[in-house]
Length: 578
Image (cartoon, rainbow, N blue to C red; front, side, top):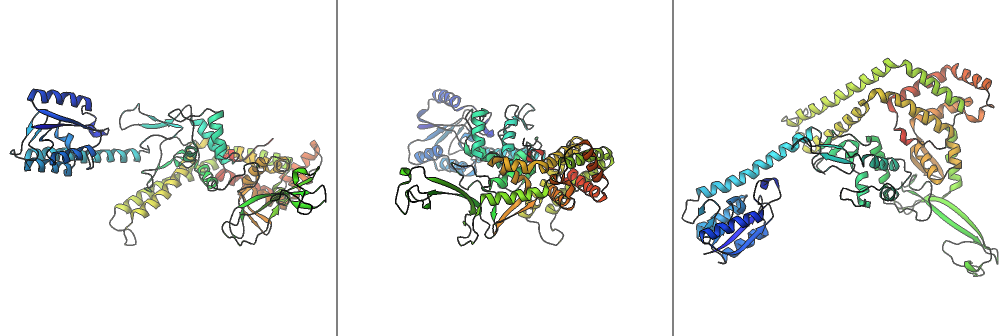
């Protein structure tokens, strides 16, 4: 009789305690020699047997059906099959006598034997896989509910395996966490494009992936679109099942959302030679397409003095003198912003020259401009009131705690609604609706917990943000009129959102803190820098007295203090230009 030796080893959890393929071959050769069995081929495979489809196993059965071999030698029956289909094929071949003998390390199987024992062994092998799958899924669910994402942690974090199997946690990478956080900071401030950030990370910071390679372009976009860095994760990906992570978030949810808005424009072609200040920031008020820069060069011919556009010409259209042969031609450069018309090719909006656009932005900045003395008075008043607001802080903290408790109760109620036969209106709660509602509540819960963490320190941070905001209002016009294109772009982004250009007029939705400043600056001209007299101790005292004695201004100050305490932004979003 001729025999095949079949050895299989899976890299999965089912085979952790099984001999390696080399050890199986060694032992089975010794077994064949001891029993005087003729081996014509040794077949090996590194693949799980929990499902049909093993190529070496299928080829072996084909050869057996064609009479190439009469028997099999394997370590145990579970090496041959762990699923009913493959196990049934082996039993059927043995019952028909096509397969005359199966030899394992501890017993033999023949066609005339009772197949009950063989069915039991294959059934036990299959049941082991089923139990293993259930145990793994149960372990994953428990890990997810504890807030730990299964699998490899993203760049900037590490998998901590010191607490034993099943208790692995995700911790900060001491070498890469702060570098990845800096990348998010550069991105959210829009001071650098993703390719520029990639170049800085690779070449200036020396940041490398886990395998020691330089970061790729696709990797940096995976980082900037991964909500794990904001404390949330979806598992499995695309399932709609969101969990709040127990790991330390690298960024806030607000920063993550802002970066997603920025990345929504990453498909637009970027200027290769010039850095235009407002590219990709403004939308057309008629069709909603992006407003893009359009640079045009005009040349005054040195021969006939004719002025023509050089963008699509290489010579004067009148005297036909080539541009490169003109003696000291006068070159005029104009920069316009216009609608790309990608959404509507017949959009009627015209272009606007950059000087006019910058004039309108400067006019908006002038509406929020305040004097240095008013800024100093506001900050001194806020600091004094802040010291008296201990009870108010506790009230806000209690309010946030109640909101957090309500979120937790909503999650519990949603789970009860899911497992109940019918919901309140008599209809079943679908998996999609359950996942959608759960995601919304989890995100709100994460936002509240972010506000509750380190509350004692965070409650005083709003003063720093307020000071940055008032400093911005005091100096932004100077920064804008004397700054680089990057600085102008950053100032416009901080100023507000929903930038619309229609009929050559720029419309902007001011940030709420700047709306307050615009109202105050309009109602009380004395707070503007243009009305400030020459600085002297006497004049400053007079101005401070006028501010303090104005009851309406005091009420406005209370409003803005309350707003900053409850809605302050990340301080990194407000520039501090020199």
